[in-house]
Image 1: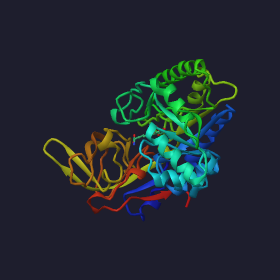
Image 2 (image 1 turned 90 degrees about the vertical axis):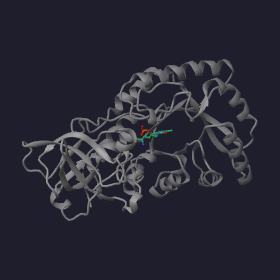
Image 3 (image 1 turned 135 degrees about the vertical axis):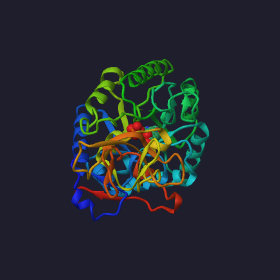
Image 4 (image 1 turned 180 degrees about the vertical axis):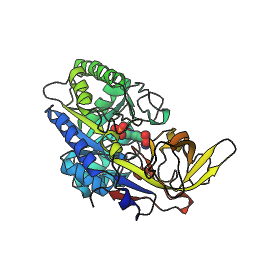
Length: 384
Ligand code: LLP
């Protein structure tokens, strides 16, 4: 990625830099992959990045939105996503959020428990409307990803156990203000192998048969998000393999003629277009280590501290990339977990150099906080 370094000189660090032409190319690839399958629909998972300018670009391309809060539903509407392409998931939807979404006329609630079905039914009745719902099923599939971002195993809080599906479907049918439109799955995030998704297809195929035996057929299947990206070599793989991902479902999932398939992709859409740009404050020589103390911390990018994630790190001001040193790259926050990486090989770095943490467009800016009374990082775009 080419950074406009001279422009950066006048911008206060840390900030997020978004390469909108890469985002546009990514959206074009995703659209092409989606259009190859007439009954496939891609919703962008707003949780990955809710920056209004980014949302507007994604909405303008014709994708739907996957939301997990009333705030995200509102952000989606503000950015121009049509209400009938908005789905709303989450284990703890509040009455206010349900009501807002019903009034807006969203396409579907992905429901995670029977008490939630009852509450949505009651609120829909009070508004005189019918709520379209899909049941989130927990398929008990190991996504082989970080424990804190795996969701499809039995022991976590998400979804209804598959064994309860027939019983819960019968229950939905007793609720007058609900229309059951499908089933919803999401097995985890940053999944870089095809196997977990193949297992998901097999699981869904088996359950479709079981439901059919009970005389149940559902118009929609939503397989969630989870497609991973290349954090190690972002310049070699700037655009994730969308066509392969969608083709896998076309090959392995027995979708009937009258069924639609929905995806909720977050990270893969926005991660590579964003970088966190920070400045070296101090180079501290320890006894056994050298520390590069930068002005960004886990308040700006929490993924290393929270998930042990590593973001490819570059000194983008160093003119001599041949003389290198090994640094622990750390932030200024008063917690020992405020470490971006240990033993990072970088060009010899000096106070004032710009450091880029790459692949930070997803779950970066949107997870920033003001802990330590710090300011939220700004967003800077390649095209102003
Ligand atoms: N659908 C549902 C129901 C989800 O829970 C998620 C993500 C997505 C779709 C989008 O998944 P994606 O395509 O982005 O993998 N903050 C963590 C990731 C948390 C993911 C939560 N759910 C991180 O920084 O790695």
